[in-house]
Length: 285
Image (cartoon, rainbow, N blue to C red; front, side, top):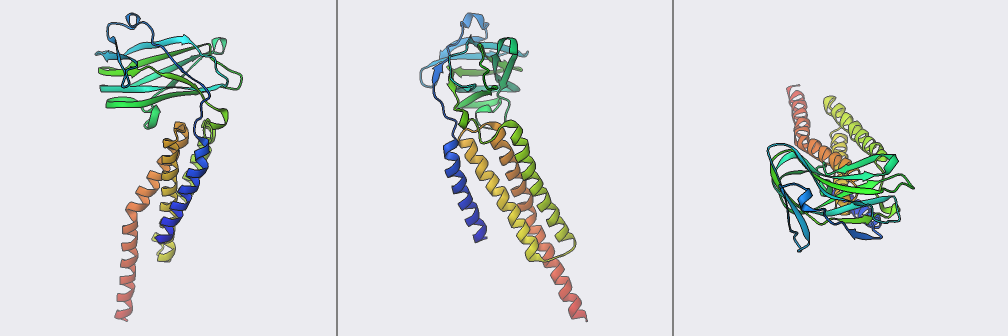
């Protein structure tokens, strides 16, 4: 167990040190101004944000609604990767509500980013929350730049939402993420396959009553991998890596630690029972 804790600690420090250089960097930041409140509808009101900045309060009704908070020409920027950040506060919001960034590339179509995630700045709007950060990143193909940006608040029903004045920032190309969305599937597949193989070996070892030392070693290895995934995923979330970077790590970590950890005591008791039966058989002879 001491070796397990040491391994996790060392790997966490290494990952933290390496990933510290991969924070989303920005080379410019521009405030995006809200549109006219009169054009947003009677359910929208101009208020103040947590630091006195401009903010818009929107109250949802019985039916779903979409409120256009901002429609503007895209700011000048140097890269094809950017993010819109701000703060949001909400109360009694019906599930499925979200902030939406529309990226208009003219004849190359319109693409969107929505806060429909489970964690960090891409977390969906649901229930009640005090002021928290939101972020709407977009990674276009090299050479592509939008001509217009639109920020909408989509409510599926009742609830009150306040959005503070958002900021537009460039993302340094080299710091956009530890890996892209496609590579995320590979990372998740490799980690998932490794944990699946370990789970199969543990099940085989318990079923056939092989070495207790081997079985417990496999269990500890699975928990160690899970702890490393959790630590790395937590670091990625703190460093504001994209959702597709930290979510597979956190998911794999939670599953492995919870499943293997929950069965560790049962597995140990199974071997103790088998040993007790063997002792009884020897005594009977």
